[in-house]
Structures are given as C-alpha cells and as structure tokens.
Image (cartoon, rainbow, N blue to C red; front, top):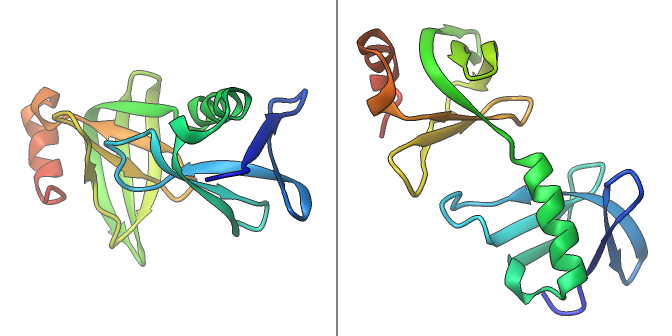
Length: 152
C-alpha cells in the first residue's frame, strides 16, 4: 500500500497515519496463514478495516518494523499437546485442551474449522481471537480420534 505510514507509540500500540489523521489500529493477518507476510488488515477500535496491506515488504523500514512488532505481539499461538474433550453447546463448540502453557478451555463457533498452515499443523482461532496450533501427528491416540472429525 503506497503512502502507508505506521508507528508504534510508547505503549507499543500501532498507529496508522492516513488522510484523516492518526488512528490506533490492530493488525489482523488475513488468509492464508501460511503466508504471514501478505495481506494484513489494519482495524480500528470498532473492528472496521482502515487499510489493507498486500505485502509487508512494500512498507518503508520504520512502518515495517512497527507492523512486524505488532504482529508478533498479536500472533501468539498456543500449541495443543492433548485434546481432553470437544463438546457442542448451543451455537458454540467448547474445547478442553492441554497446551505448553497449561490447561485451556476455549470456544469456537460451530462452523469454525481448523485451517491448515504451511507445515503439518493446523490452526484454529477461538472467540477471543487466540490461536491454537494443533499437529495431529504429535497427538496421543485419544486426542487424534477427537480431532479427526474437525480435519478437512
């Protein structure tokens, strides 16, 4: 995107400087997740898209550094080691899992499916926006059986 200027304030928040002045934004990596340097949506506090960046490499060095830092902070992925249960409740699916950071309970929409990444793993985003990486081959047999229904 031409004339895209991004900065980070003292608190590390990303700011987009456009025609209407500076706007605090958060980056959202768009599909495909397998190409993290492409297609980043910058969204304001009301989750409206302020700008779409096709390639991070097209930004000036200062803007690129600010965006990459913000993406790194926003793209923490919990690595799932075991799936204890997956249950449907009303319009949600409730996942009870074990991760490198300990036990986690998260919810997804019923129509939310794990997406393949550029490696053997899959990733799923919960309702809070957290990402969970799942490598089916590294799961125990019970977890693999629970996860099988959600693979494409």
